[in-house]
Length: 207
Image 1 (cartoon, rainbow, N blue to C red):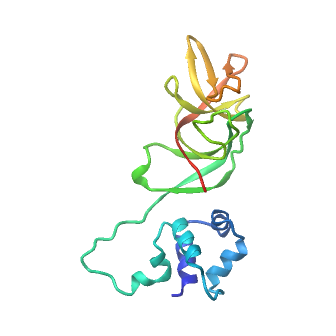
Image 2 (cartoon, one colour):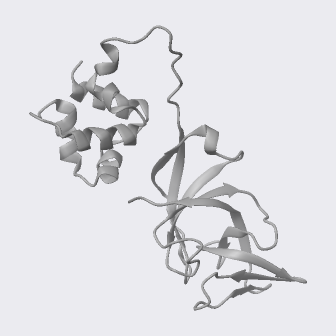
């Protein structure tokens, strides 16, 4: 098995498409196909390392070096990861139309994840800065309620738009508060209802 075969095998084992791998590496789908076909003379070490990170394996694994000799006194750890769907984008500023279509996946170690059904939504805008930067991926645990002061993904405007805000309760009034004082709060009323998608757990950013 050559390196192209190992790249393809690693991609298929993680349920990723050529386009998904290309997007993560900032390359074209044709380039990834060329890697998998073995139609490459010298694959740069940096590229091998980037591919290994995407597939959550070691560069040595992609090169086939770990199959040459392996100590018999080491217990192999499972490389299993959890595939979390990325659903559209969520506004950090003026609400935007929620895109409920799947746009890709992000891969996480199960040891670092909370319980419950999880999704990722990409932040857009600066209303939650500096807490949540524009463009970051926000991990959401789906739940119908959050505690006062917690950040939540919230559907508004008849469940047609989504926004990411801090939920504040003052008596019977619920206010969606931005962390950036340049933006106005969003007051929930009977004529302007809202529904919580889930609690924001953390965010990550791609370099």
